[in-house]
Image (cartoon, rainbow, N blue to C red):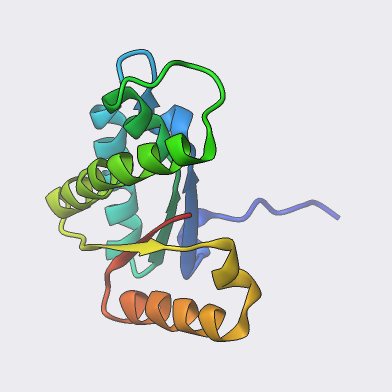
Length: 143
């Protein structure tokens, strides 16, 4: 029996995981804006065809550590959290601008491990993501 390769156009919901190395030029501490804008165009094409889009994005720590001029290598917990706090603002803005250029609205969803382990938190997160999808926004999830 021949295997059939699934086609993206047949999926109702598409979850895209974007890692730090795809988004951030760590040597310069900048986002790859051209790449991000091209991805946003692809996501908009699928959304206009009726698919719900969810983005899971890394990059906050990578962005923040360069803004804060932290040296390469392992970070202490408080350094990592400081880098994430600074980088998350830039990351959310970049997603909002890139998706906005193609007619999509981004909704930032910050999750913690607790949000997946405790039922009440999980249900709240699920309801928020569901509402964003229902209204046609793109949840951009970061931990």
